[in-house]
Length: 604
Image (cartoon, rainbow, N blue to C red; front, side, top):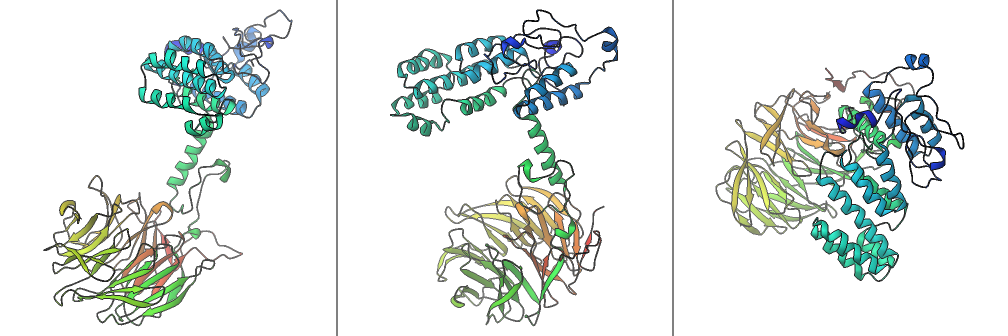
């Protein structure tokens, strides 16, 4: 990485390559690398020969030894100099100062400018007057003239707080009135600082100011803030090597097609000696269980929000609720809900997972609201025999829901089925309630998704497709919508920017209603059924599928990814079965990764 400090100072800043090298006499208490030692007095004494003078020696060594050794010494590239400085900073953070001295001396590099070293030492010692004077030396090395004012403000703020903590109220007041206020910078913050004068004791001050108190911790945090205003050629950003390594690890995870575990930003959780690779065997593309209790086409499946249950709806007029074993991830039949004369084509769990609403196909005018805990039917709602209630969505408050269908009905109701509001003339294909508790998204027969506000009775166009939107779902953060579009497949839309983000390839989508889903940790993956009897999985950022799951023998109508167990997924099919997908079963003699009868990859 190229250092972007002031160009005119490059000859005396970071690396001096067999010429000037910033070192200090041992009597000054600073290391030859320009950083303060544990027994220093804060005064860095610079020379220009690249070596340290010993106590009482009275002599200075030659620039780089003999002429012969100088000729042999390799001139370092900018990248090599940067790496040496990064290593030196990291070693210094570990307390290996003698090692840093030797590294800097042998390489001819300097960790930071001598003015920056003085500044660092004075800040850590709390010598605020000298630290302010150091700013004048640093001014010429900085790109932004306004940065000096901001840095001075931060210094004086720390000075003010330390005076207050020490009980020196008059001195603190003088800093506030005579030094901070004349800067005419961040007056709002000055008003907040003045309020701290009323703190009765040090603990009260630290709590209200959210400040660690006088000492190494708060001064180190201050120094981290101050360093952001200095070019890296003058002073490296804090913990720069750790930052770069963390970015590298995160980039490898982002590029990993099968990464489906909780993100951990700590470097202690990974090995820096190996590239990050997730095996396909850890991904939910292997059949773990086949549920055969339905006796006709299975039209819908949906995990509860806590991942402990799965509900499946079928043409056989039943809803089956399954319990997920938290240890084995096996599903067991919990209860069967009967009496849906037209079959069950859509299901929606209440936000607290207490209730489940079931809807039927186009010619169904009824809606069932079940209490899953008791198995009792709380509400059977039907406004008119002419209605078509085929879709439903819960309001985030769990006390209301919206429902509608293609015959122009669009209702908002309470848990007893009482009509609260209605919107006339909207032929609804699919519904979703946003997290604001006011906006309802509805796809209609005009190949669009519109937002409807039931409070102020306004509506607006959000998504416009060229073909019928058969179904859609929305990400947890409400930003993205996943659409199954007739004859086109699966499309990803950004609801905030109202733009089509991506078209996913591979799936066969005609005019059947197929439901796709987001899934995995951070909803990094997308899964959809298909009319070619397969389940397709994509990484959200890639148009090509990363896996095709085979096993169903007819159209796969719906896919649901467990929100609590990222390695568990369910699919419902016209073949009358529900398949539960999970990682490969552990075998003592694992074969190398390769396609099997359930899962094939598309890693081209």
